[in-house]
Length: 175
Image 1 (cartoon, rainbow, N blue to C red):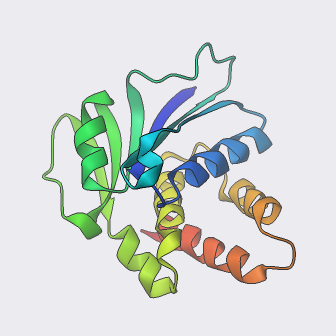
Image 2: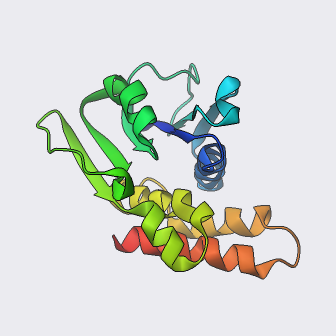
């Protein structure tokens, strides 16, 4: 098994964090992982992205030319990366930005991640709602391992951050 994922959105949407949490969760399951963040001018509000590869065997390169999955959090990222999705790949998209027309070339999962995050009380967890949708759709990593990563990354004593991320992940899984 090998899963190549490109995650993209605006700088500040938690794209890098989503990739890091996903990679660390896969490591907890004993999988081989690469996390390849792309830093540059995009951190000032443009398109930001990272690449995560999860495999049962050794990974030769962290670079992803064609992805099995795209997790897209804004429209400019969709335009930039849609050509990098393999034929019949999975596109997970934040429909708070509008809907994507169905396509025979890809599987599309689209839910209003940003709107759901706002209802949960923190727009910054839209990335974790998207992650929950990915976990449910692909079942490559157990959600329990992602929750372990949340506990590790949360500032000591800040249960509020842990709880809102847990709620966002569960909401995404329910979708």
